[in-house]
Image 1 (spheres, rainbow, N blue to C red):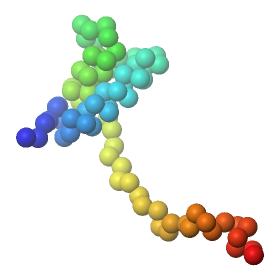
Image 2 (image 1 turned 60 degrees about the horizontal axis):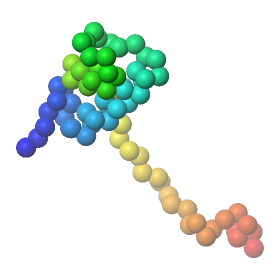
Image 3 (image 1 turned 180 degrees about the vertical axis):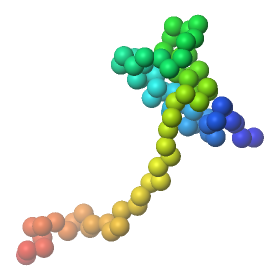
Image 4 (image 1 turned 120 degrees about the vertical axis):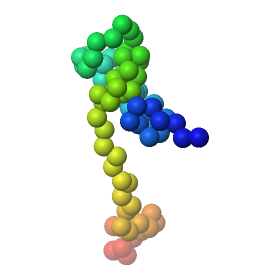
Length: 78
């Protein structure tokens, strides 16, 4: 069963977004909506569910070539 919370396609993404938004609120950011709740966690959850928290999904890039950890600048010159 796939969980869909608001426009979020994954419950894990929802948790990460809500946690990051909670940290922003704790650091002094203003809430994007008015709620009855005074708790930052609940405010963040409501904002994410309402679609007020914007996010981008960035594809992870793979390193082009791994460097041999034993190969250092010093060993190349010998």
